[in-house]
Length: 310
Image (cartoon, rainbow, N blue to C red):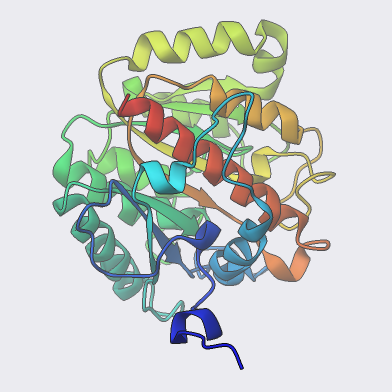
C-alpha cells in the first residue's frame, strides 16, 4: 500500500484561487479578506453576506496563467494569502464597520494590500477608512451603476447608498480626484447625480462611457490619477444582469463581461492601494455565474497589483 503524507490525504479550507489560508502576512504583498456583511442593503435582495464564500468556490474555475496577457501566476508573484472572513454580525452595523476597518488596517499596517470581497457596497466605507489611515490623499475609483453618494437621515444613516457620502464628509478620500464610472438607470430620489457632483465627485455615466469610448475614458483616468494612491471599488451591478444576475440592485443596460475585463486591464500603472469587489448575492445568482465573474474581476485586480510592483 502506498504511503501518503497528511497533506496528500486532506484538503484545507476553500480559499481564493487556492491561496494559502493564514493570518501570517510575512512575505505577502496582497491579502484576500472576505466581508460577509449586507445589512446596509435595503430590505430586498438580501444575501450578499454569502458573497465571499461563493466567490471563493467559483474561483477554482479561474486559471492562474493567461498566456496572452499574463503568463505568470499572480497568486505566486504576490505571495497572495487568504485571511478568511471578518468575524461580524450583520445586524450590528457600527460594530461590523469597526471590525471591517480594524481587519483591513492590520493588513495595511503590514505593508500589504487588502483585496476585499463583499458583502454589499456599504463595506467600502470602513475599507476606505482603513486605506486612508495609511495613504493620505487617496482617490477612489468606483465602478458602479449607482454613485452611492445619496443623502441620509439619522434614522437611516448607514446603508449601501451612502458610503461615498460618508467618505467625502469624513475626508477619507478626495472627492475632486475620485470617479464614479458606469452610472446608469433610475433612482428613488431626484437630483442623484447633482448631489454627488456637489460633493466634488467626477461622474462618467454609462452613456458618456459608451459615447467617448473606453480608450478616451481610460486615458483620462490614468492622467488624473497617475502618481496618486487609488482605492479601487468594483460593484458587480455595473455589469448587465444578463452576465451578473446575482447582485443586490440589478439594472439593465450595463457592461458586458468582456467590457468589464477590458476596463480593468486598462488601469495598468495606477498606484492601487486597496480593492473591493462587492454585491455578489448568491441567493439571486444563476449557476454561480456572478460569483465566477467576480472571481475573474478580482483576478484582473491581482494582475494590476503585479503591474504596480513592476
